[in-house]
Length: 293
Image (cartoon, rainbow, N blue to C red; front, side, top):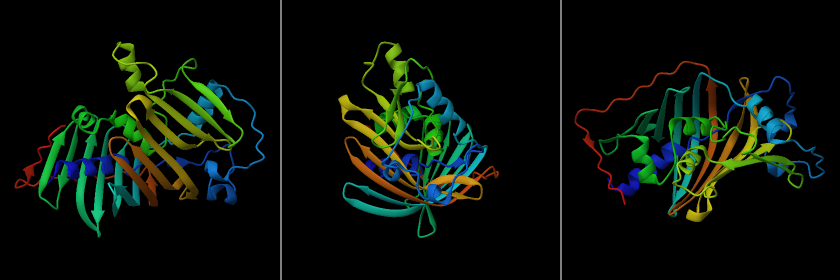
């Protein structure tokens, strides 16, 4: 098995299940037309937004964040990587702040599983009878990324874990042309490095775009201009099913040394139903040795 293939599986596993399920806000009534799509592409052109400072936008965003103890997501995924087009199914089982199991299926057969905790990442490849064990430090070096369990969990549920919640660090924008609100800031993990004097303050940024009606996140952008790297996820086709209000279409664009596009259609979302995390590495499977470049 090539290093490239393992990287693809890890990238798909960590990013392709991105979703933003969020419970219907009790204070707002969502009409049928609003529920069809609350993305920025369908916002009213005659927009009349009032200015809101960062404190207000943070409060509204937090009020509308997804709250859960357990999560199950099933999705159809299409990826384009190095001109190769692949389609498969992905399932995510998650216990908040604890453990996450991602299953990749091809033709209803388990192809690979990835088990993620705060301290470790394990993957089993059933097709080639191999396995991988590592941690986030290893994966971040391998993928040239800034990931941890909380970041992945928050991206999956459409929350804002990457924000440094200090008003003086956040910059609010009222975009009347596209009828949406925006917040931008430095990324938390990068900011820690900056505070230690190891990174330039302006290298890594995050911009979150909020729907002006319900303050749901409809676009989340991470960028490092100096390194020409970016990660953008856009949410659309919002629907309410089984008391869960969520975007059922997600488009992810990853631009780095290699480019990847991921399109996701959600088939099923369940919240607060305890999940089983079945993950076993057969004794005859051999370890995957990934050479870092």
